[in-house]
Image 1 (tube, rainbow over the protein chains, first blue to last red):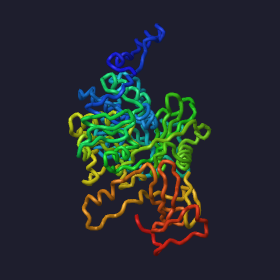
Image 2: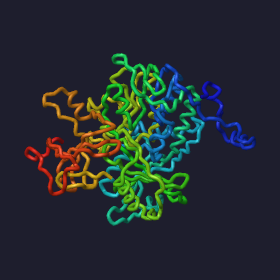
Image 3: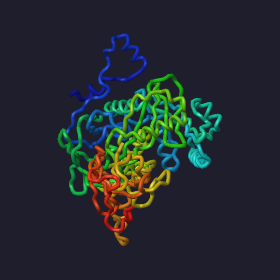
Image 4: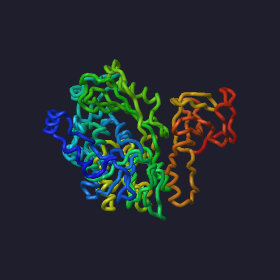
Amino acid sequence: MSSGLSARESSGRYSGWRVLLEGLTGQRGWSRAWAKAAPRARYRVVIVGGGGHGLATAYYLASEYGIRDVAVLEKGPIGLGNVGRNTTIIRSNYFLPDNIRFYEYSLKLWEGLERKLNFNAMVSQRGALNIFNTEGQRDLFTRRANQMRLLGVDAEALSREQVKALVPLIDLDNGRYPVLGGFLQPRGGTVRHDAVAWGYARAASRAGADIIEHCEVTGMRRDAGRVTGVNTTRGPIEADTVCLAVAGHSSQLAAMAGLTLPIESHVLQAFVTEPIKPVLDVVVTYGAGHFYVSQSDKGGLVFGGGIDGYNTYGQRGTLPVAEDVAMEAMTLMPALARVKVLRQWGGVMDMSMDGSPIISRTPLEGLVLNAGWCYGGFKAIPAGGMTTAHLIACKAPHPLAAHLDLERFATGRTLDERGIGPYPYAH
Amino acid sequence: MLRIRCPWCGERDEIEYRYRGDATRARPAADAAPAAYIAYVYERDNPCGWHWEWWLHVGGCRRLLKIERHTLTHEIRAVTAAVAVTVAPAATTPGAAPEPNGSGRESGL
């Protein structure tokens, strides 16, 4: 078990010059990207969950708010939860102004992230295209695009011909769902999701945070109305602030502190095909169903659909949704019929009661929540980490995330992007 | 793929059904405090384990069912009518389904 400053700094700064140098000297200078820390008895901040949001929160606490006495506890190895199970899409094309501002802040952080982390996360702003297939959708998307433009976010309306020019694979004239046009956010795109976990872990570790793997939280340490630490499989750990960043299992961890959350857990499936030559250089979202697809740099088409639709903690997914997604892929891009699906997997998500995330204090002093990410957790990692770090460090909500508080459900300020109501399985 | 044994129609694929959420939330009295209604509308136990839930047999008899299902294994160990009578799935065969007690009217959503 290595720890201490020497281990933290041994991986050094990454650069083209370094790659050249190591290439000429037998690649002997590389070492671990981050220090594998063992838990100490006490930290100023303990973050439960070594996913994107937990690692980003630790990094921003150290780099932006000067709090380096931080531990990130992960029950398995980092990067195997939802940060490695999503479809890697980033965008800020939301409808509610508060959500647009929050996700746009995230997109701006993505734009400068690699330089900041000194890590190649393969941020690729290839554009995110929403297809519309009905007149009603055209109105809805136009309204959404106008809302975005009013807030200074990029959005463009595309004609059928422009859609075809951008995505030659699309069948514009499907008999049942003809494509009427599209709505493009040119700055949307994809990011290599594993590299996001690794990059934040390395940067957080270099800044002084302890990343502790194989350390499962088994209970909350309480003192009256205050959370004072956590019990783990590697012993008790005291903390001034405990932050839960365990989307998918937030209800389980909150229950250890006696809280009931406005969240249900559901599985979202994703799929990847065998690698093929470049056929798709934009993220495409289908209007006549729930289907989105992009092509990874390895050549695989990465795609997904809606949630399976009933409460589950099973990280697998069932066949009806897989069939549904395949049908939508075929309707939109018939040429995909001959491409084989290589892998399918599922991630368990916090589906919140209004479809929007929660970054909030809780009724318990010393317990902070980063939860309820629904489908939107990956793209929000930089902003989620920054605003959660702000909440912990300043003991007040970040102005761009103040609307994501837990009290909104009681006070009627819910953030229901699609106007569905309190039915998590329908968001 | 879930296979749900409807007391009226027999065992059918999940695609015939529509999930209607947690069946353990009881509507508070009309004069209950706002906190009771906030808990009823928004808060969910969300257990990792056995879970009572509503399913509507929309592609079959269109009755509302109350089902006990495990949220990790997806095993179903009880399918009942929306009114209070339990029908063990294994004991039920299509065509010989017992009628639920009471008026037979569905309630609870």
